[in-house]
Image 1 (tube, rainbow, N blue to C red):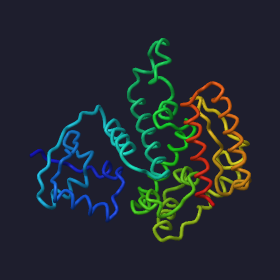
Image 2: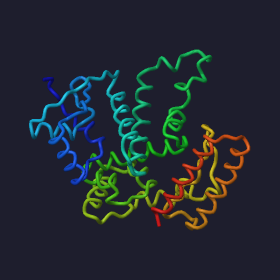
Image 3: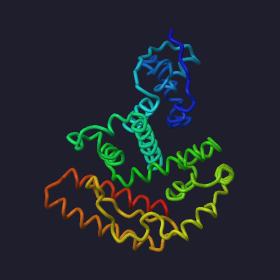
Image 4: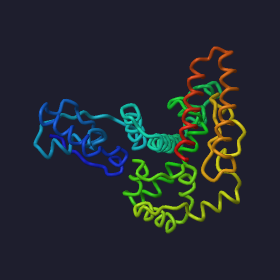
Length: 295
């Protein structure tokens, strides 16, 4: 049997199963055996961690398949894409995954300069459009959302470096933290991040003074005072994303976002662009959900 290695960083990408779900999986494996193959990359387990743990514990036979990737980042992107397509994820988990995908993609491009020097005839190819625009199309969101997700993922991972437990609490929704604040946490000194992580675990989290001060001095948090939203470079409606502490009331924010969506929806309807309308509607719903969670 091939030796299987557990990479803790890659394993941490996978949402932990709750006790009940894990128990049901264990019961199923004991009754029916392991029907789905574990997925390996150069001996490293990248899909099937819970099945592997249960099968090893009870001596249940299992099979594995090997996949080839050009780099660790490519393997990471495959894991992310698999999890997003397979699971019912929370908005925070989706933001984290999209942000990680963006960062991995940018790293791949940074080490693969062949694309930078290509002829102009390839300028319209999907790979040559901006990373945010390409991922926006993949995940059916705006490119502005992808850029924000990259900051959010950076903040969540900074918390995770100080406390894996605090990171898990954020991703599972056990503690609620404004996405704008998460995006700014990564810029704080490590000692301040450690304090934030400790307060999350203790259940005493409050917005760090450095973040609150930056928001006060820098003006409104991302889009809090935007009148209605914009259309990004991918052609997708990008509503303002009001956050706690913004100068607009939730009622006014909802009105402005709705006005922007209505204007964009009218244009898309005139063009008969059903796909564009569905994307704008999805973004509009997500924006309203963000306000709902802040109330």
